[in-house]
Length: 554
Image 1: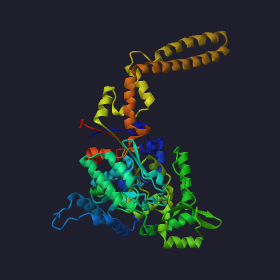
Image 2 (image 1 turned 180 degrees about the horizontal axis):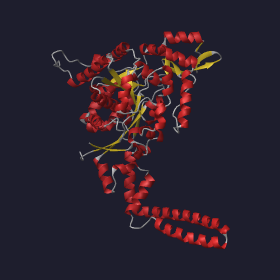
Image 3 (image 1 turned 90 degrees about the horizontal axis):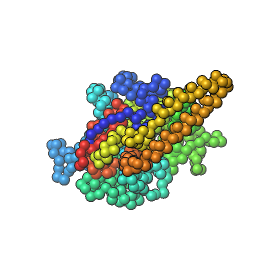
Image 4 (image 1 turned 180 degrees about the vertical axis):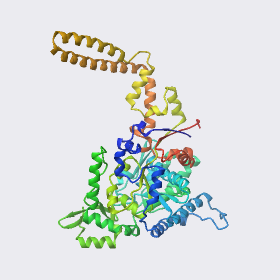
């Protein structure tokens, strides 16, 4: 595959706030720690204060990976593999083990991305997020060789919005896991996902790559009892060879490091005050914000239960339950059972930065914007704010679609344009007629100036009337031009239908391909080479949209 790049602003798919951030808008400086540049990382590393309990973090990760460790054969001391061992699978965990151990070193830092536990990885950008983290960690190691950088995928295991993660789209077909679900999605039992697996794998086909991916999916979801373990296994097999660490922060040990922050948010409501104040400042800077903080930004979490905590009638009430606490009872519950307190969208980032030695967070456009609301809260708690990195985005096309575009005298960059505007400009360019009436309008404007002057000499009060006639005529000319273009479109219906079909394939449901289509068929076509190509072509700090095209018709 060959890569080309365009500006994010040229995709017409990213918010003005994101474009402003990428352009280094001075107005946003108060809302970030450092610019997303190598110089910014250099500055952050010089002053980085790590709060993470490294030994506890390593212990938890080793425990979480134990199920994978037990099922992957290990390399013997001789460097040879015993009978029936897979060198590939063994090397996957070897690199992960190495990176987990490195986290105890004070010169090791993490580069983190996070996402929900979408079944079968969900949309393509799930893959893009992780690749961006791996590539950025590698780039930073090249720039700062005396330090170590470990890519981390933070599983959103405590999220409870099952409707957002229970489906994926592959070849335009929606595959759903039908289940009555409640509570944190990471704890959901996967014993009833078999029908969804069968539907998904049936789309993949019977090629060698298809069988490999089908086996991986089946093993992940049928040999692991919950969605968190299944996702860890799947992601590790796709990315473990690059040293990616998968973390599940739904952990009593890790949350014990977050106790004082939980208590202050709930009892003093400090986060609500800080984030509200920063949100107002962002609005004044012209940035439309994404999330609204609550007075209390934690849920109460038990199996099949994740409900908001609210302060009512002098007690702390868990909504939709009979559970309530006095202040002293709440403090005791936080101390004794921190795992029962689940951060919402505005407190999860703080939790992440407390338990990880993190220097960068990689997110999508909406994530970057809501992180901009959080800097003041981080400052309040004296937690370092990471550098925000927009994940790499890409459009992946086929040789066939590229050829069809070229036949219409278009390139892939053109297809990002608004469909009506693209068709209008295409017709004007290829029409046998002159559809633009600008020259004629200029002539009419000159005539009106003469009429206006003549009317003024007769009676000065006639000038506004002349101007009003001119405005009405300009509108009529514009409408006539639109009708001429619309009429001429019918002469090119075949070509325009071809353009519409290409755009529909590259932009399913009218949006970026990466926001809906699953990676499955790309893996079937390219195998692990697909991920390797992303690693070769993604440039995390260049902030360009990637276009990948087949370089032949294979």
